Amino acid sequence: MTEKQINKNENLISFCGLFCGACPSYTSGKCEGCKGDSPKCAIGYKNCPVKQCCVKNGFFTCADCTKYVSTKECKKFNPIHVRFGEWISGTCRGKGIKMIKEKGQAEFLAFMEDKNWLTIKTKDTFLNKKLGKKMNE
Image 1 (cartoon, rainbow, N blue to C red):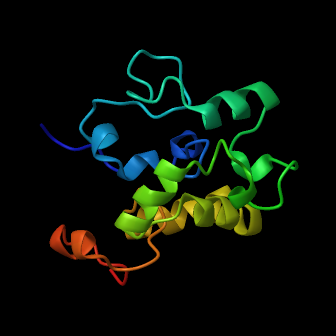
Image 2: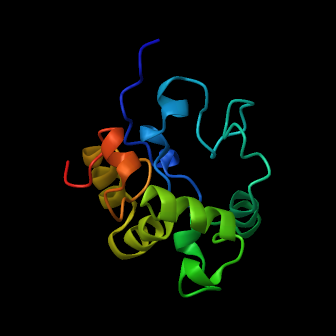
């Protein structure tokens, strides 16, 4: 199956700051991101508390939230299993939300497209190196 080209469409920015355009599920056609209503949207994330909160409050992403200064304060955004996964993978969705707040969606998209990252990498991990996804690429 051929992979789709990464699309600069802002709807490929997930509610939590992932870039769906670099996600293997999206690029293989198995998922259409978390912003749509298609049955193929956000496969496995139908009950995502972040998505539910953003939709309820009319937020495009968590960057629009004014309740918390940082995503670290939000229990919906930052549950322990997600923090553990980010520690293992050397990534941080919160840094993506921070970048969107500070630099805007267009710059976030350009950065993520250039890096071809699903989420912001914070360190080169053994797994990232094994998969050939180094930070300095």
